[in-house]
Image (cartoon, rainbow, N blue to C red):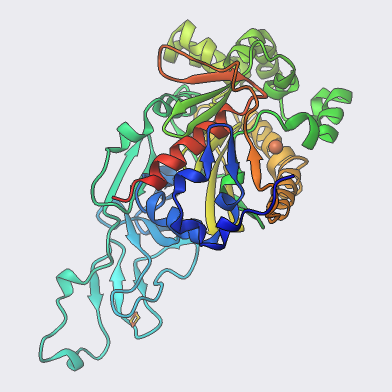
Amino acid sequence: MNQPDIEWIRPAAERMIGDLVQPDRVHSRVYTDPGIFELEMARIFGRVWVYVGHASEIPNPGDYLVRRIGKTAVIFVHGRDGVRRVLLNRCRHRGAEVAESEAGNARQFTCWYHGWSYDNTGKLIGITQPGGYEDQGVDMARMGLTEAPRFDSYRGFHFASLAASGPALMEELGATAASLDIVVEASPVGEIFVDAGHHKTAYRGNWKLVGMDGYHANYVHASVLATWERDPEAGIGSTHRDDPYSDPALSRVRHLGGGHCMLDFYEQRRKHYDRQLQFLKRFEGGADYIEAMHRAYGDERAQFLIATGGDPHVGIYPSLQIINNHIRIITPVTVDYTEVTMLPIRVGGMSDGLTAERLRQHESFYGPCGAGSPDDSEMFERVQRGMQAEVDPWVDLSRGMRRERREANGSTIGLITDEGTQRGQMQRWLELMSAAS
Ligand code: FES
Ligand SMILES: [Fe+2]
């Protein structure tokens, strides 16, 4: 056993960040040190494109959501002028939050501290007792709610960046844009709706623990898998019923570059395409859906899309995941406290019966009383507590290093239980955290 490393008496954030991440292991301080967390907020969440929401969440003028980009609360709002924006949830007077609900419809946001008000485009429309400013006056035109420096979208998925410059959204999305295509093209009419409610959960652990892990399912979710074994109809649906973890020849972990990762079940699901067809046909409207998909996308693409069920099983660095039927937003709060918001996706052009089945599948595993997510959170909390140990502080991420390989398209793949996803995320972490500008 190693002796405690006295070098750590110095604040970790002041040390060379590079010391914390090695090719096959990561120092626990990466997950436990408040100084590192602050640096992450600046160098990761203060810089890259961060997912804020889907267009369908704010369909009408006045609709808004409060989301966070790192520690910065923002309002994702549909203005009365028809334009969607990301505004800082911060009064231009003395900084109070102006949107008090997490979501709603508002013609204006009024700050409760001293009563300044802004319309839903962010424009300052009124200040109380304006006479107090008579010498200089308040420049109403310049004192609207601050917009996020950059804002862009792809296929309805909206992202913002707190940095005024940097790579364009599409550049940063890279290969994951194709994953978003899969989500949208699960619909024969090319439309998805994030309008089936959401639930938020929190765990006492670091935000990076919500990884893309293909190794844990047989252990953490053993009881769920046993249930599905006994009663396949009780499970999350045909896409998981065939336990993809059991066929490593077909299921893979994939690092797409840029910290973006996926558990790649495409081949596994393609193999069981017929089963997916049978499953869909059991529902009213299922056969029509299959036909509409073939008409919309042609046979080859339709088969692929039907097989995947619109699930790219992707993690878009740093805080968006799209897994099975839902969008997951990971919100770091403190170094050891994280909120996770899960929003089921409703697919346009699907019958009510199919839609209901997808929602029930989602709830059964990920819902507040689901059989899966609470177990994951429990593990994240155990990891966070275990990582407090200062003796032998290294977290091992070496699984599958020797057998991973790089594909011509630049992605790195390994077997489904390998830790190539975690290594890919930490590579990106290191790259961002090491770059001061
Ligand atoms: S802080 Fe908002 S009106 Fe004063
Ligand atoms: Fe899990």
